[in-house]
Amino acid sequence: MIDRPTVLITRKIPINGIEILRSKYNVIINNKDRPLNRKELIKDVKGIDAILCVLQDKIDKEIMDIAGPNLKIISTFSTGYEHIDIESANIKGIRIGHTGNILTETTADLAFGLILCLGRRIVEADRFVRESKWKNGWCPDLMLGTDIHNKILGLIGFGKIGKAVAKRAMGFGMEIIYYKRNKQITDLDKNIKYKAKYCKLKELLSISDYIVIACSLNDDSYHLIDMENLKTMKKTAFLINISRGKIIKEMDLVFALRNKHLAGAALDVFEQEPIPKSNPLIRMKNVILLPHIGSSSYSTRSRMAEIAAANIINVLEGNDKKALLVQK
Image 1 (cartoon, rainbow, N blue to C red):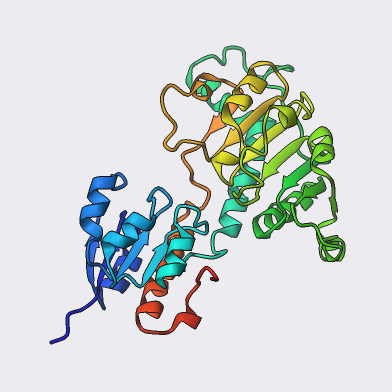
Image 2 (tube, rainbow, N blue to C red):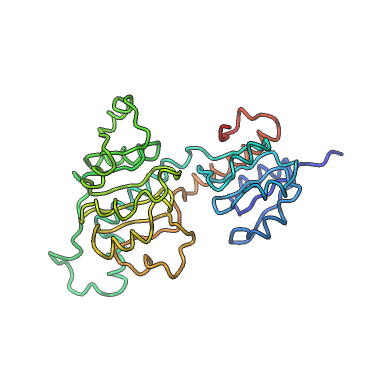
């Protein structure tokens, strides 16, 4: 009898993905409500054939070495894969799977929800009612906010998520501008349907009413939004980050918010996750803080589980072309 391959799943994922893998392989699952620490990961990874990991797992050369020669694929439950040592994986012939663009629309929904919450002070107003501060009924100057319709939306990054946010903004009659690192002439034609205009970063920051970060994290975007760029923003503008925390230099943002260089911010991602209790952002009233829930809908997370599992099956069964893989 041939031994079945073994798959390590580093966090509890939707059950459909687990059942797909259990139907074919031996499965080891971390059932704790937290990521595996380094010691636990090293212990569990020995001798396995595939890893299904999440963003918090640092899958580096040491982990690959300890896993041993049977490791064929690392499939991440995310669209990003910066937590995986791609170079070492390529040297070892290990394939890297990801979930592709399945989370695009769900993440764009959240981004626009945050725009609405910031502009119309929705979170603040809810808290005002719950804390029994609403004493005098309707009031002409109560919770005055900022309109969304006809305002300028600046998108940093104009890939699939950026375009999905732009599509939503069109329904509010917003003027849409964008900045992207690798602008091509053909972008001007492709983006006509979004009525989106390319701007240099400084110009975008200086004229936008709402700025959404929707670019990927790389060497160029790391700490892209620092003090110099934050000071360029209008004092009435809002910053929304639904991408990666390290694109913003967080302590610069704290300083900028305290000194009213911008009106407020909404963050779904942070430089350190979970955000520590000592982080000054927690005590600031002009910030909305979310626990990295950009793709957190039942249907999207379920589909992500299916894709992550299918990537493993396709690679282990020699059908690499059917898998969503990082290109070598």
